[in-house]
Image (cartoon, rainbow, N blue to C red; front, side, top):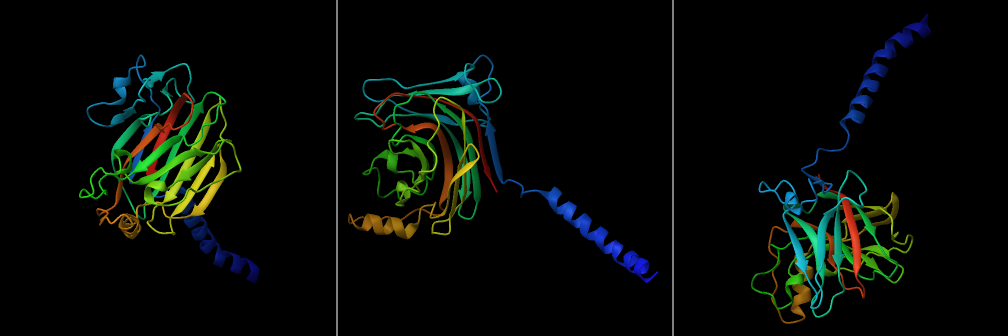
Length: 283
């Protein structure tokens, strides 16, 4: 009898705890402050559909040709990882001009302390090394000191972090040179070629070493490292002071654009790639 009374006494507490646990699990991750998804779906492979006047899809293209070739970008239905369309990009090697061919979403407002996740599917054809090919850029153009001007080239006026293929064996890395940081390297997994590959890049943003950086390729984690991933005012001030320049990083520091594709092709060869199923989420 005492045992039965005890069970009846604690049963309501068990039920309450069980309900709370269920409520927590149903709540899921925090609601996104910003979410942009695009699978490059169109009618009749029309590029114009990617740039509607209400800015609900992409914003612009970044297109810089080398001196003796013309880069290409189009919507195709011959290769895709999801849906019926994907983006096809052909970027020729750089010469006196840094070759670029990518698509851009701007109007973002991503700040220190935010958590950001970027996902995209890539298919890159060929077997030649892709050394220093850049695939995704997250950048802050408004933070550049307007008094310094373009003495360092327009490509350097938007500090940020990028995904870059490094070395002759094609290891995907997190490149931080534009914020005066070293590249976060990995040698665990070679970037697969001639097949669809899912890249997921997640960061908690900070201008000091508390920033969190995680990179996975087809679900395999290859980088998980704490490091700066936003421009730091003092770092920029110190770097430019070496050249006798008084540089003041503009505040607030905000990443306002993301680019995907061949955001720079300094490789020795022509690159043909397909991009699909792009997502950027901020919370």
